[in-house]
Amino acid sequence: EGVYDVVVVGGGTAGLSAARRLWDKGIKRILVLEARDRLGGRIHTETFPQRESGKVPAVDIDLGANYIHACNRPEQAVFKLAIQNRIQTSIVAGGRQFEDTEAARWFDSKTGQQIPVLEVARMHTLLWKTHAYMARLSSKLSTEKAKKVDIASLFDVSLRGLMKRFFRPNYQDRDLTSREKLILNKLARRAYGYVSPLNDTGLHLVKPDPNRSTSVSFGPTPDLDKDFASPAHVEKEEKRMRKEISRAENPEVSAAVRDGEGGDRLVLDGYDWLIKHLSKGIPVKLQNVVASIRAESKYGQDAWACITCKNGVKLRARYVVCGLPLSLIPSVQFDPPLPTKRRKALKRVVLGVHNKVILRFHPDKVFWPKSTPQMNTEEPRFQFLNLHAYGKSGVILAHVWPPYAKGYDGKTDWEIVLEALSVLSGMFGVGVEECRRTLMDYFVTRWDSDPFAKGSYSYLRPDGVLTDLDILRTPHQLTDNKNDKEGSAVFFAGEGVSEAGFQCVHGAYETGIAAAENILRRLNSTATKWLASDHEAT
Image 1 (cartoon, rainbow, N blue to C red):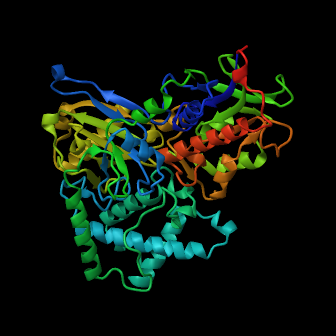
Image 2: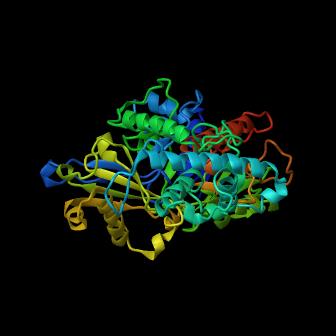
Image 3: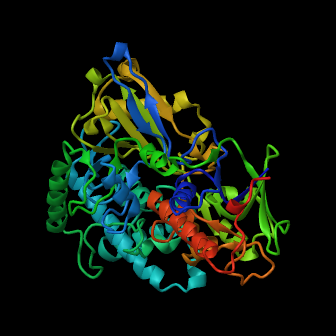
């Protein structure tokens, strides 16, 4: 057993950023408890080993987070750290948000032919117009009615209403070709369903907030009262997209720098640089799963936190930072119990699934466009990021979103790899057997079945609202006086409680810093005179 000023539960970005700030401010009696056998949480850098006696070099691959978002924000702390540490990054294709469908080359997985940019532009234009129609319809819903509507339903109603109004009075599904439907569906999933099923996603994405990193970015704002589908309009968008596709070729990789470009950055050094930076010198206990956090008054008049792990380890601390994913908080027993409103909010803000299939082929046998960073297809399961174009020789990454991402329909890793190979084979006219022969290594992530994550990152369900994040971020007092602003408490941090950085690494980082600053204020209060650092651990 030990006594600490602060115990941090969870060794991911949120927990480690809190620990780092406290440590740097002179609070040395802290301890980070991590359930895994490694630090990092949903940041996890792995390595494809060197092959052929070093002729094929080792390559670092991120199985979790690999983007720095919101680089247009001067206060974006993770981007600042990347600049200070000269981390190798590249501005994403299109210069806006990750996996930009406008800056991608699209290939038909059945014919191996590139899908005409004009066709892709037409579907993007339809998406933008549908989104505007969704915003108009949702603005007429009361708050309570909006909680009963999901993105899938609103998208379908808006698309049908739009087509009837501007195209044909008797619009039927058959008026879009099968490939156009698949492309439009792919665009909708990138816009709204990259981590959640569309039929379980709330309408907050229809009203993007420029202050939130996850606000959806849609090309030009369409005028609902004008004919947007004229050949001249679509051809204009086609020209713009052609320029973006061309400009994205041969992406530049360099040390992170604030160069006026506000787009997301792809991290190429391995995101574990951040974990190494935050954890340096911090006391950590790995493979300790926290079972309970309860108040006890053994030391002084105020309650202290007793943290008990499943392996029997017991610790006491004045304050606790909980950096667990939202999905794991219900597995911890709190005494006093978490308030009802927090427990309800945990059912409205939940973890979704975004997985990856990462393939390495022999660098001399690359069969896709070598210099094109972003490649897409009408096939619904995979969207491809060409890491070969960024200097990771022979590597291509498939992003996998719901519904396929959740459980992969029960398939094994190798079966999933074969499906990805089949799609790549169709896109680029190369036999599946040839793909198999040149495949050297692969990773298949399963964040949804990871017992210490149970998902990838958070999303709001239809009945969820942004004020739920405020509820989830509120400290949990362990003293009898719930208005006590100085006594023992549990502070929550993570991407799932951040409004400005919801779903993002910098959201986890910034909420960890905020939790630490809150604790520092309490520790520096004249009412707080007893510190564990004044005593030996028991």
